[in-house]
Length: 543
Ligand code: NAD
Ligand code: MLT
Image 1 (tube, rainbow, N blue to C red):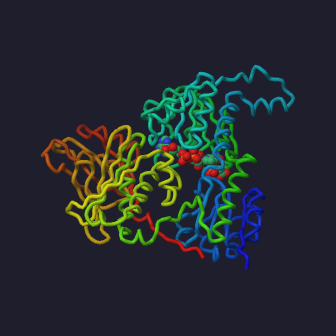
Image 2 (cartoon, rainbow, N blue to C red):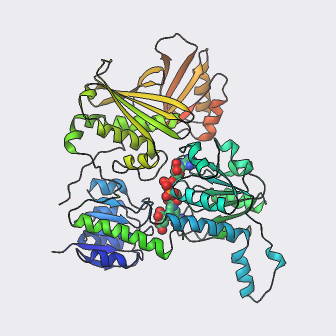
Image 3 (cartoon, protein in one colour):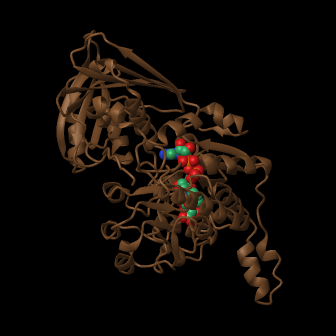
């Protein structure tokens, strides 16, 4: 029997032409969960845009499903964990709509400055109102860009060509890369907010960027700033934006993405007379982009259904099982070491050095390198996996150095991850202290031994009485429960410095972290998140 593929969300018909050689294709409108559950059991392939939410219940109802294709970049509408658990490959089109989203950003910026939507409505209502729509030029103004990936880079190039001064904040990109595009590198958000006439967002929504634009950061912006968001809803606090527009602090905003999509009819953004230009997530909606993503994803579905591999799988490891076997137990540790070292480092990455010691030095450690890179990159990129982590690292021109040392250590196997950025060097080491018992054993020069936990506070401090009590009091006053606390010291010198390590029940957000940093004697506190259980290694055999 020929395989069957279901295509929803008004994806270009070309996908059907590409797939028709290997499968029977059904095109349907976007369907709700209950209707999809009834029919999805018949299909071997499924292709969606962002409107269809591929929930765990839908995935549970899949009986023959081999592959789900997302005609776009973000896979946040597909429950990846459930898909992976069911052995379903998820593929996307990471670059097919880059140009479209960048052009939409520029279109939003210019529509907002020249009142195009309002002027259009006014003339069509029979008016000839010229004075009312006096705009603002972008020439010579400063455009602040958060995120310099595929879309951000394209926006920056266009803005520079328009004669704008461009300031870029992307803590994961080197200053050289920013300067190559004719822009200026902002080392921190402190030097970013107050100088921009326009701010545009091109980062993914992550723990760090969720509500990045909030009441506090809006207050730090220049009066009259104009904001554009063509990335993801939830990076801007919509209530705070409404208030700032109504008070006149923000002159205008242009948004393509919203916390809730389709937009909630009660959204504060629809209940303001402040100046807003809104579009219904149209960033990728050009004929060319829809053709690109449809072709890209349909070709991958066709290939997988005919027994070949997919080029942009977001959930399937490409590691050989025989090479993986001896180091398998260390994969989760390696990934968390990458995630950890990235979070204690600042600046654009220049080099990652991975040294394996003890028993690990006898094996091919390629899988551990992939796991470390996945950990490092997943802090700043969406959909990083074992397949694409090395590719992203290469695109980012990250130098990767592998080293082995058979010199004995206190542990059977030890992984040492050093990250060199343009802001400095940090090292984190991890070891298996007993079977299935991974521990972080060293942070820079500080010797320690603690479990991989979801929320960790690292607080280097000057050795003096009362430091622990002061930090615990701040956490206690903010109702944060401490589940583990220890003080790490340097191995050799008695020294004047120690590092406090606490694991907490909740993640310590930026405001609380700031309060901790204000404690006299604490000099570089960091709030870290790790993924002790969520990182799973699953192999899928495709028939
Ligand atoms: P990308 O992965 O190429 O680039 C993302 C960049 O953000 C990276 O350079 C990363 O270093 C940076 N970044 C991560 N965390 C950051 C932080 N805390 N502060 C500053 N920078 C940070 O992604 P892309 O393809 O350029 O997409 C960018 C965004 O646009 C994504 O959220 C994507 O989902 C969204 N998107 C929207 C549409 C649309 O229709 N509106 C279309 C395509 C993509
Ligand atoms: C994407 O992630 O590709 C975009 O948000 C575009 C879309 O879903 O239409």
